[in-house]
Amino acid sequence: MNMKKENKSLYTKAVITIGQLWENPIIKGIILLALALFVYFLPKMATLYFQRIAIMVAFYAIGAYTAVLLTTYRGTNYLVAVILGACLAGAFGALLALSTMRLSGTYVTIVTMAFFYVISSIILNWDSVTKGSVGVLNIPAPNLFGMKLTMKNGGIFYLIMFYAALTILATQLIINSKVGRAIKAVRDDEMAAIMMGINNKKYKIIAYTLAAFFAGLAGTLYGPFMGYINNATFNYDICISALVIVILGGIGTVKGAIIGAIIISPLGELLRGLTTFMKGLPEWMQISQPEQWRFVIYGMIMVIMMRFRPQGILGGQSKLPYKMPKGVERKVMK
Amino acid sequence: MALLEAKGITKKFGGLVAVDKLSFEVKQGEIVSIIGPNGAGKTTVFNMITGIYEIDEGEIVFDNKVISNKSPIYIVEAGISRTFQNIRLFKQMRVIENVMVGTHIKTNYNFFDALFRTKRFRNEERKATQKAIDILESIDLGDYINDYANNLPYGLQRRLEIARAIATGAKLLILDEPAAGMNPQESENLLNFIRSLQAKGYTILIIEHDMNVVMNISDRIYVMDYGKRIANGTPSEIASNPDVIKAYLGDASEILEEDDAV
Image 1 (cartoon, rainbow over the protein chains, first blue to last red):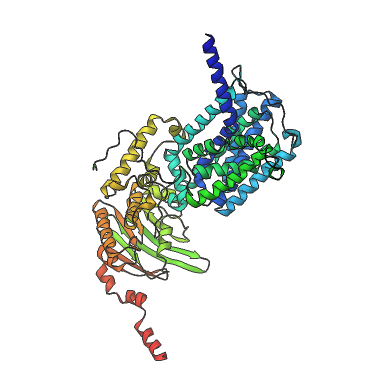
Image 2: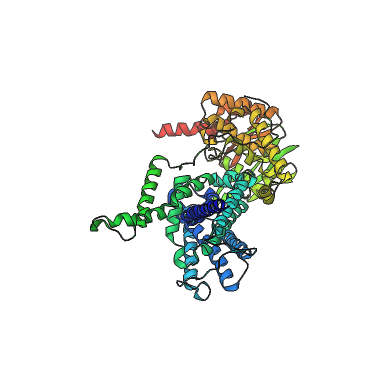
């Protein structure tokens, strides 16, 4: 009996340790999954990814602020707040899609960049609602049907895993359907897609809305997890991490986003361990924030990937055969 | 009864009249070619038929329905599908996915069917996949279904583009320079392929520069120059038409004048 209890506490401890290492990263990973869907519209140019990732962070911020403000100041039920947060982000996605409808290439990038700055300025300056740079403090732990999910009982970790699974599943279901094919077709060649009878506008709106919805959903996790958010939470640092994850894992694939997030995400935490190591070094080698080394590593990863494997670890063309639905026959068998 | 009929269609770009009161018709089961020197307005005609350009005057009737100035999607649904002068496949998608994009308008389920994998989704998806495989096998692309479109050889990419057009359920296929960039062997294969499509009941409208292809395959030919129709008839009639020779090779008197000037 005692033994069992001990095992259980060991297990909980392990879950919490892994959780701490990966939780923040997992949230990032979820945004990136959302991004994987969004990336379908990106031209094959890495320079443009960054700006589009920036708008994902804007949607992420919309989701986070909506959920946090509702739960902290209105006492709204956690689930309701999450759904509202994700839906509001989705609505902004649709708006952005409508406003970029007649633009292409670089011009879309300019509008999305502007959108990011508009959202950050609103968060910074709308003091009466967002609390500006002071930020929102004492965000309550998510309360699911009377159960409080905190870091201590590992609940947050399971919640994050659940969201990740949900996002992966939904993304896969959508990609492997008529909707996903239409989105990919519009990305590859819009004119040819129109000539196949595909409503290009409709599918652009769908893609933007979905991407924004999932980014908003990931955002709703951030507040309860950190307990505190302010305008600086949603900055270009997140964009850079996201960009590296996508480039490392593989642009435009869900698998790639997962692998990239698993590899890159704990980096910041691990590098914090460098502090102790650094103390033993001569003074001229000391730096104040060793975790900032991750940006050096990010840079190296990007250069190496672009030189040797621009499609990412799991990106590019799949060698597996196409997965046929059940009941399909080939008359000529090879 | 004509399947496709253009009645005096005109397209102006500012002051330039690209297509000037052009009339032509394509009957059920025919292969009709439109030829003409560069800049004669052939591709503009295709863009007018498929709804990319609005037309300024005239009317296009397909299968007893007026399709001029309708949306491209309406026109695809009516039964016209096209290929492009410079191949426009979905390069990062597999061969079978390319054809399945073609089945898009015939696949009837919505977003939520896909999300919840309903019975309707499974049935429709099975039907679409089966149709794509049947089309690919019927045109000897069955061995390539798992390949990505941009890895196919040039001749097969052309063929895949036609397969994708067929998948929309089109009755009329519009081919924009299908033999462009092909070697003699490839264009010979293409000739046979297009004939086999005709045998299957498709009606085909072609723009082509390769005279060997045009003369061998067409039931009738329309010749355009400066946006106007200058001749029409069977291949043998066109080959001996003085106006056509003039449009392609220039006027004999002009040549003489130039000689005099020198």
